[in-house]
Image (cartoon, rainbow, N blue to C red; front, side, top):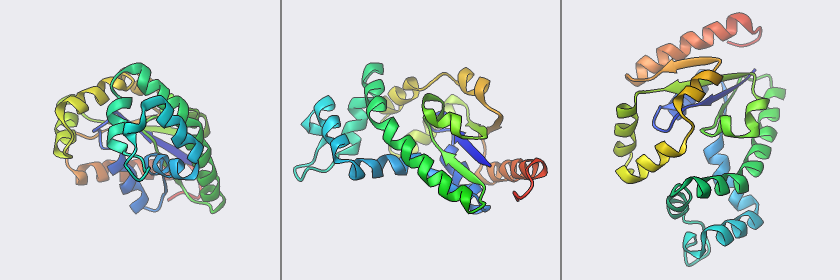
Length: 200
């Protein structure tokens, strides 16, 4: 089974994905893949430079990710342009890694913030949405060291929660501790194992 895990920024979806991996799932991390594809596809980096300018590069020609993020999340059009350039490469690599894990008979978790905005959605068997209240999400982002203005832009750039809730097969609320989240995820895995032979 392939589980797509997503949620609004600051919801704790990546923490949830790591917990599931600790319980035996193969973790496919879309953010990690997004970093890798730019190194794998030099032509993609050139396109990003043409779109967002040479300021996104260091003097040695490497990508300044924070600078790219600041520009890409400045407005909706810029965000869409970034997604248009990067999503096909990311989706292709996710599919490759997912197929490899499925062949090994593993439960697969695809951690992807943009799961619902991309072609990845059609390749998963179940969509698990992790959610937390807006104030809690903002506090988590600030604790990571993100500027309030940057956090606000990123939060506004995502789909509304109503859309996540509508398209979720399962929804887990993560307003508490990591242990509380882990307990909920263990229960989730037990329910999945009950209806999917070979998982658990």
